[in-house]
Image 1 (cartoon, protein in one colour):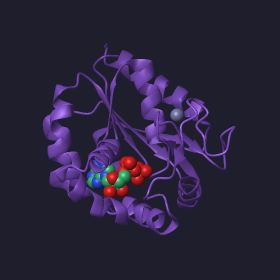
Image 2 (spheres, rainbow, N blue to C red):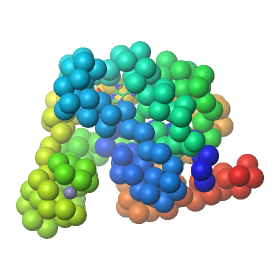
Image 3 (cartoon, rainbow, N blue to C red):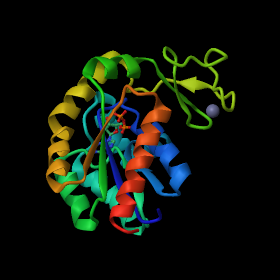
Image 4 (cartoon, rainbow, N blue to C red):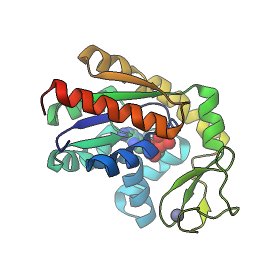
Length: 216
Ligand code: ADP
Ligand code: ZN
């Protein structure tokens, strides 16, 4: 599956990051998350990080130009990829289309209420990056990661006001991409309320089918 070019769509909290990590392990495809790259830039205090942080903290999108400059090189040098959090605007989708075609866009569907519930209780391990949920899959030891015992932290943008803002931004700026990929004939949809293993299985099935149709 070396060459598959996959885009994950869906609101914040739908499980794009969790799925992308698991798909990457199963397929060897490169996982590119603009959110992770940006958070890394912020924690290193780089010029890009300092600039991006103002938008991220408010739940707004970072300007398209900063994002496309940041990610285009990674995309062109990858032989197949899973894009998670990019593209997020029509402009970004057009920029992507100029660099490479997309084989399959998977929309993980989740309602606004579910998004708010999930994100308010989302925790990330500071050491290994594992994502868990203090409400739906509480860690065995309070505040510690089940995998590595690292400290669990809450993302600075996972607070009620910012979560609602991010969902509104998603609805206005990112949801239109669903139609765009539908028109291109590459869209598939999966219910984000299914258990994560089930979502993964369905994605893997779609990838395999798509591969055989295109005789990869
Ligand atoms: P989530 O999907 O949970 O909202 P991400 O980690 O994908 O979170 O993104 C966090 C923040 O980073 C976004 O709210 C936004 O400010 C910024 N960001 C990430 N990807 C992009 C992108 N493609 N375009 C613009 N801003 C982005
Ligand atoms: Zn951990």
